Image 1 (cartoon, one colour):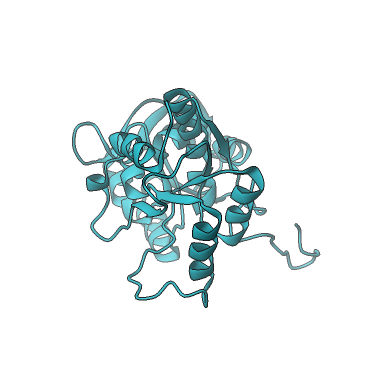
Image 2 (tube, rainbow, N blue to C red; image 1 turned 90 degrees about the horizontal axis):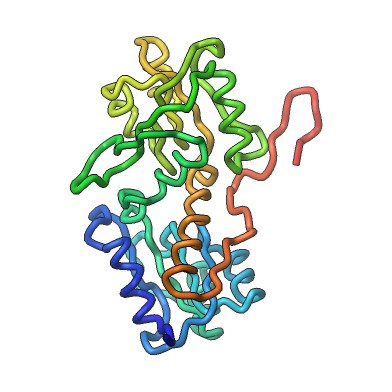
Length: 272
């Protein structure tokens, strides 16, 4: 079969229907002619100059991204911003761009399933269900109980975390066996983790006051592994599914797009 942007889009939308996306989200085909052939695909978290350059270097003619390039309303794609320059580069080099964001978050399997699998969780279910077994986040159990400290080290080893590792709120000796996870920015789902009665909730972008309030009032321990690190695992099963479904070469991006590149300590030089 000869794959085109149109047929590839149709395939993606059987797995990640745009109607599953949040109302504020912008998903689907962003650039590319429907009749354009697709022979090689690059899967990325972020559409940035570095990942577009990687697509060109690897000869990909379609990029599948998790984060939208144009999330807010735009009235111009002039090459006066990096987003505009990317659009011009994609069109000029014949590279299509497709985005699956919150519709991939709630899919089953989706972003949080890949995160749960990376941590070895069993018997998973949605943290905040939507419909038909889908939903945001996942709740599962560890194969064997760990301390919170051990779980934090497991997460740091299993995920592509930033240079400072993971941030943890809770007693390192606390036993944990039930775990909630959410890929990306999961701060708003803390009440769902509390209601689920889990021992620990792992996500990214946790906010100071929510964490402090929970620490003071009791509830699950919290682990912030970062936004990028909790979404990047999804690219591997996504690429595997596409290879099986299409027979096309699908490459997982080697480019780390976590914007935090190093950390500094008070008495040490910056650590790359």
